[in-house]
Amino acid sequence: MILFYLILPIVILAVLRFLVALFNYLTNPYLKDYKPTSESLVSVLIPARNEEKNIENLLVDLLDQTHSNIEVLVYDDQSTDSTSQIVLQYSKNNRNICLVSGMELADGWLGKNYACYNLSQKAKGDYLLYLDADVRIKPQFIENSLGYMQRNKLALLSFFPYQVTKTFGERITVTVMQWILLSLLPLRLVQWSKRRSLSAANGQMMMFKTDIYRKYQFHEQFKANPVEDISIARSVKKLRYRMATLLGTENDIQCHMYGSYDEAIAGFSKNVCDFFGRNHKVMIAFAAITTLGPILVLFIMPFPLIFAYFFSVIMARMMVAQLSKQSAFMSVLLLPMQQFAFVQMVRAWWRSHKNGTFVWKNREITTSK
Image (tube, rainbow, N blue to C red; front, side, top):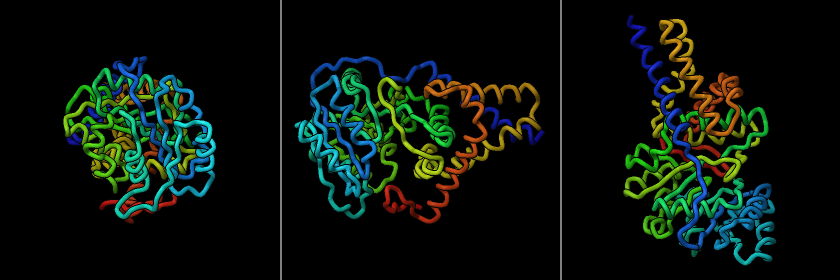
């Protein structure tokens, strides 16, 4: 009987995650067609460090936008490849594209945050649109995003892009973060609720109203934070401004983040704890519960609760896969391997946290203990 009550919370958690996934599935958190209320100038700001494989694709996408009133600033963060040459070539034929040569990293700053801050100082737009260099966008993306911000009076709009996965290792790893996010956070409530706990943002795409950004200088506020996007979202909520975070599709914004299993583990490990409010105890408990939960429930709980547990887990997985525009069947089939990958991310986070540093983009980043 004691074991029953100890394991019952595992079943309850699975049911609650199913309900969150169902909420996300029913509320359809995607961008639709929105016409801007004004032809505002949008400054597209791209921090780039050794992005020769990606930057040209994004520049081509930006030149094809239906909202033409844009300026494009690319910050070359001391790249050692041909990133700057590619941008310069495009800037010769397009006056709205400009290369910003990166400076030596200032003390107390992380590379991307410093790049974003410096880009904001040179931008002239009414809106600041930060995009990672490995993002691809469709022709109406800026127009629809601007329209959505204006019609909903937002200070910040962010996206989780559709994730392109090309290898088996990517299919195992990249979908893990979506599984966690969309089964723990009711995404529409980021916009509908004022609660700071219901905050989420993704640095791959963040669009700010310029006057609000300049007033608080968000990247300067969190200059040493490796997961500044989530901290900025919480700050926006704390300041009582409106924000929204949506899911991308192949028809608006997509991204190919990592090229291999190991690269994805290393990349996601730097911010996995922030999905749990930076509480490593909650993260570790979640990893243990989701790993051992199926075994404990199967051998200890009565059949009705076994059914409720596995029904909730499988249905939540299928709905998250459909929300992410991935195969629901493959998501369920790969569930054990994805769980193992999640545990690997937690282990990698623990090691870097214990050491106090991790390396990203050939720079050593200090973590807070």
